[in-house]
Image (tube, rainbow, N blue to C red; front, side):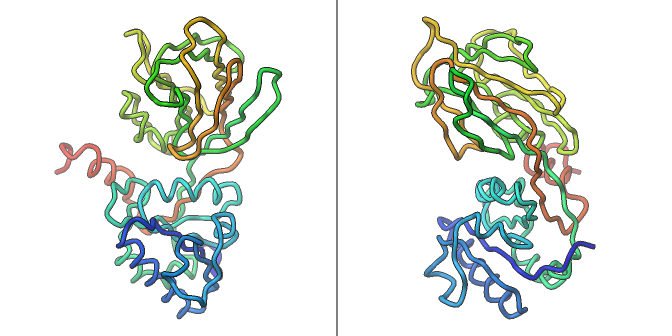
Length: 293
């Protein structure tokens, strides 16, 4: 049994009318149940003046965050909730819903149960990124739940990326980019790029090249204890500005001779689950429907 919930944050995908509808319903119901409700600033004007509004950090300073939307909304919230250990209840409102897969109408019926702490949590590995300049100084630190993608800034050019694993040179990829993913992110961009599906409880880091320019390049599954260092070399094959993108959302510019250093984060994302038969049932339904009985 988890601790009783007294303060809840609510965030929603504002471009989805159904998410806005359920945000109103959840904030009202939580208020009726005597919960201290914090609401995303983007929902101001939809949920009423009686709530406190703020950014994702404000929402993460709670006992639970309810995320109404799809996986993108949950990923953006995870980068704030993960470092402080706040669990997230992801509710799907018509998107792909691989991470946020519970239905808002069904969960509403179980809301009082959730507030008593009667729920399960899945702990999901996250990645820590450090962006170092040519002098080895850390310029940016960030984290990701799904992946870090290093590619050209316009997404249209081939790049050269020198890659080391724990200080040992792996080689220089010539490709459209490089994905460093968690097991959670293995079913995202990594899978589209030909990488493997890795069950979330496996402790691993996955390195997959995007459209590599050699047929011998293959995805690599590494222990989660390693450090992956990707450096932009100064050579005649350099093809323009490069970026590092976190979960397909936050982007950092990477200059020549700078390094993107990725390793397992010290914190994890905690996903609330109301049923046990979640991962494989969802995997088959969303990605492998041919296996369904």
